[in-house]
Length: 318
Image (cartoon, rainbow, N blue to C red):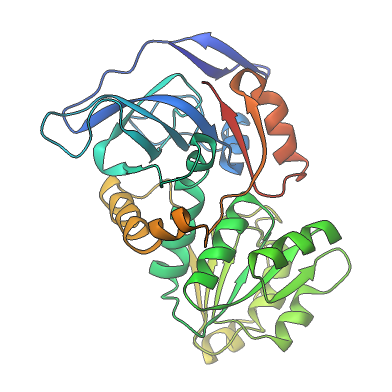
């Protein structure tokens, strides 16, 4: 089979690699589509290696058809599935534990289905499990027009939360309002901390962190949970620790990729139970910015790197 490999100069190449060999608890998927995530850009730069046992090439979520599966289990050859991976999605085939796959929601295309597992699992893990989100909470989501933001805004609204989010342009502001965001902060024209002070949040899912983290954390509601999932804005900030502990605010670091397969399976099962009908009905939408053939993965990466996307970017193989 072929996969997208990273050359020594960080360029990408579609090259031949060995076919995956499944273990007893795994199935083989013929990949039709693989969605991009910012973690792919980090891995390309050598900063985010895959967990042990996963292929060296990029790709955290795919959709396709089952080629091989354990006898007597849930899946059989030909089933349409989407799957959460530790890596290896930028390829013609991938081996995945059977509990880390879900059926393609009725009515969705393969590219749409490929855009679900990573973004929605990350949102569910951090907002629902780490943050304990409930109806009536005010939730802050950084970068609401990104692929992850698209998922998080809609998931929070589906659970009855008020959503505050950030964007970087007026067209992205319109985009996230269409997803249901209640308060939209254009980070290029307004002060995030100042606006958050008027809308104290109970839960934050923050992919930026950086110098703004301290001032924003100081606006949080008593007992709030601020969950940092990446540091795109920088790795350092200054916190007022006296204010922090007096208000009982929790600062949580969280990544999905490093979780055990058992934990990931629990998250996916929750998604299927609580949200799968919403995908089929259109209540929750998977919004694709662009689909490109997998051999144009480098161009797709540039869209993410320049933050041009409104929603997900997906690579197609079939």
